[in-house]
Amino acid sequence: MTNQKGDQAFLVGDNQQTWHEMTYGGALSFARRRYSRVLDNVDVVVSGIPYDGAVTYRSGCRLGPRAIRAGSTQLAELKHFPFGFNPFDHLSVIDYGDCYLDPHHPQSVFTAIERHADLIVGSGAKMLSFGGDHSVSYPLLKAHAKKYGPVALVQFDAHCDTWPDDGTRLDHGTMFARAATEGIIDVAASTQIGLRTYNDSDHGFEILTSPWVYRNGIDAAIDIVCQRAAGKAVYLSFDIDGLDPAFAPGTGTPVAGGLASWQGLEFVRGLEPLQLIGMDVVEVAPAYDHAEITAIAAASVAYDWLAVLAKQKGAPSAPVGRL
Image (cartoon, rainbow, N blue to C red):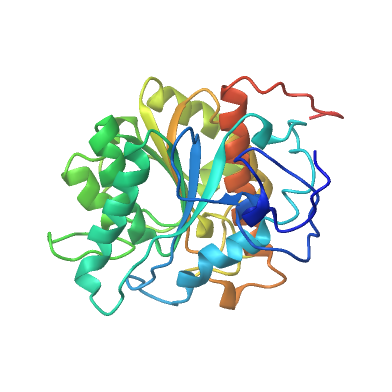
């Protein structure tokens, strides 16, 4: 600790330093992490991808990164629940800011995202990305596949996002079909969780629908995901509409019958056995949110992913109470 107070996103001296901050004031980095573009000795880079030009219904998730950062302020205040440690005592994490995009030249957007991710992933850091619509996962996956080869995709979502792709159409519902066709995703090791919209093909993914999870439990879902992805480089793509609109109304394509926020959090915490290489949290549209509940849920699943990485590095878990 230090006698310094406030605005640690700009004032901290290193990437793991933490001091007191008013939850209702100060610079809004994710979980008060240092704003930096120096990638030396960094474990995780947080970055926003503020693009929503590929939506098929309600727009507005270009403002998602800003909302998720705001939703993270309370998370930085206390030790992680339930693990009982500060993840940043064990991880060097920076907030890189947002990927710069030129929406007036839309053909340049996915190239810009891929180059942005190439720089970060190529540095050796893991990448935690905030969308933006779900199409941003495609260039992010391309960048990760360059380093790791075909990745196991773990997709938390209401939609399959494998709708027919003619090789030219790319929106937030087709990109995983293209990624599978191009061999970016190892579908035999990949799983989709929480789906409750229909597609005539599973494209080789294991699909654990929302009703299946309700009947069989989140632990059963975690077991299947971990068995399929064991030994593979695993990329987690968390579409916030995988949660029921009761828990995440602030999204562009809400679908009734989804999972609860506690199930989403338990799911992320259960991925500790896997080789986690990257994560995105997408489709947060704050104009449709109420009392920040969607942004808080999005920030929480991202923070839990960081806590899991900290556990993988040896952070001692000290839960209090029955879990």
